[in-house]
Amino acid sequence: MRITLKRSGGFGGIRTTASLDLSNLPKKKVAEAQGLIAAAKFFDLPASIRPERPQPDRFQFDLTIEADDRAHTVSIAEEAASKELRALLAWLQKNLKS
Image: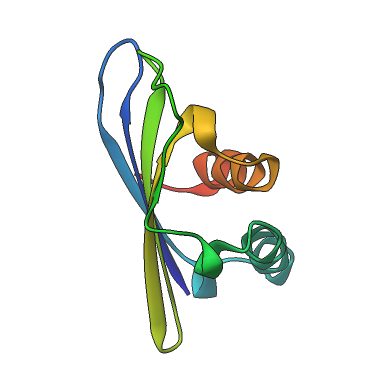
């Protein structure tokens, strides 16, 4: 499984991109990631998650997960993310390498 997270926006408008290949992680970390992905129902999410009223200076995430024979990308406005999706994003930001 390969994960790529692009982040933009915020006060500084700085763009970052980081990727992670789960096959390079310890089993405990792989299980954590897979649990968060499942809890967020990532592969069932629409391609874009936006709030009714955008908020300035918030982060924008483009999250791509490639697993086996499927890949899915979701564009996420920070303020519109579910609790489960926010947990996944937080874990990824902590564990991804630029």
